Length: 197
Figure 1: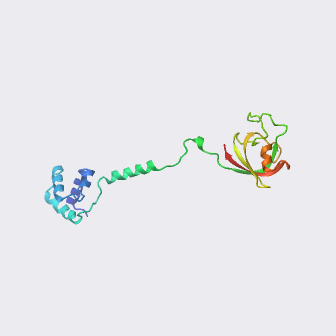
Figure 2: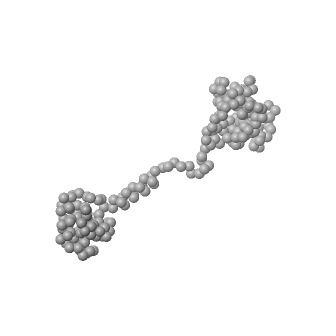
Figure 3: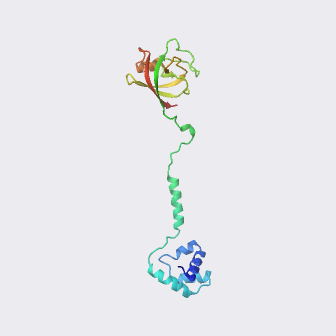
């Protein structure tokens, strides 16, 4: 249980201010300078100071109960940590890639009879480029197409709409079909991986 005069002493120390309070609990502090400060700020008998603090300071000699400005240093460490931490967030939404998705189905190819015509996105179709038609993927999307029969893969860019035959999920240019080995068979089971734009 805290005695009345002890409680009054603690209240007085806190009233002196945080910096003054911590400074008296360093190796340089003595009962004399505590008494001097207390007599200046509050009308407290030196005898009370000596009885309550002198014995405590002697038993804790050369030891710091508190480090000066420890709260300030703690705050600085927090700001230092947050300033140095790299969260690696994207600078804008335009840097976010389309999430990878996988689909399976049958692929076909087209070229002769369509070469030189205008595609759905306004380009001139070139059967010798690695492009493809897809029912709904955004124009410009890049797709990795893998022939499930032989393991061959090719990356194509979506620039047209189709195919319109039932059960088919992508229509390849002649160049892409040649790499996948689909020219002769005309169709093949494939796996599509959406890579982004």
